[in-house]
Image (cartoon, rainbow, N blue to C red):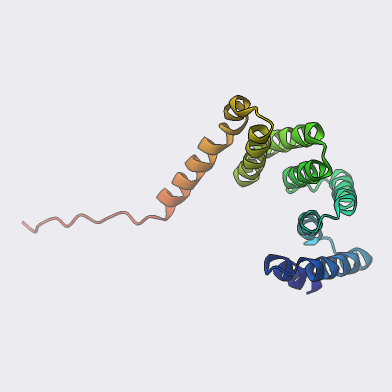
Length: 171
């Protein structure tokens, strides 16, 4: 419950209080051995720590989470962890390492077919490249993710859109 409340506080603008609850909740999950939701909360914690400029702690959380993913094979969130790693590195002032982390995240998201992770990462990479005056490099980096997301959305919409019935006259 602390993790959920912590996320709500972070999204509601009370980041410091939210981080405290997330830290407490993640530790409780670790101690209890409950791993089902832990990785998602670690992502939320790393993001929240970045938001309150606690960069070293955020990097440690991401590092521990990536190690756990490697040990357990829990790979679903690796692209997001790599994106968060890039974000934290960028906040630390290391744009080169941040770009490398974003590119690794993008590759892993595309390998998994995780279109939303790919789009989030591509957006961050696009912003970084534009800020560094490398806008021309942006198209090659970001473009591959966008058509897949649009195609997936179109397939989902087609599957849920009712087919109109044609009324034929009686003979």
